[in-house]
Length: 189
Image (tube, rainbow, N blue to C red; front, side, top):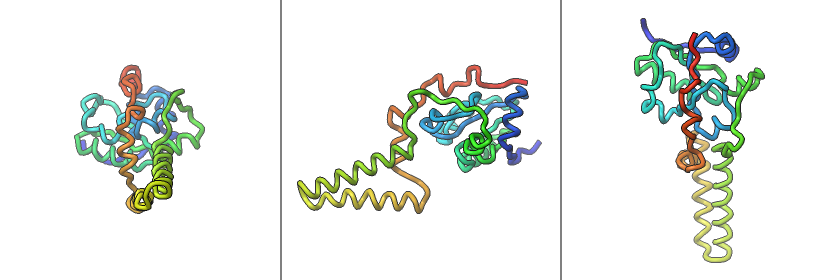
């Protein structure tokens, strides 16, 4: 049997989970996003960790991959298919579509800020520090603010953010073992 790209609408996924038809829901976002709102039966495996944790996946079950909007889950789907998985379904529209449909989500009470919010905070703080240092210490500190501004422009143009990638490695952005384990999360038919 050939492995091919399959898409799944959120209504189909909800029906499958409700009817306990079997499958594993893999959330491929980063921990702060996952902690802020996720599908109750989902398991966190970020795109970056996929290859390291692939041996935890049951190849006999359908795998549903979901992210915020569908871009990262599409990438995860391609990786899993390349690793020989046969039934990998990309959830179209991601968590945005899931929430819009009004389906249930879980949240952690002490979820960290989203990465986007963390980036805005750190960038704003660095710009403010650069301006204050340039006014009170030495004018050359203004280059710190210019560097942050240039970095934000680069992040927007390339749709990637080095600061966000750096922040994902901070201790408060790491998942707890219970959050990302497969215990009691897989649905068997």
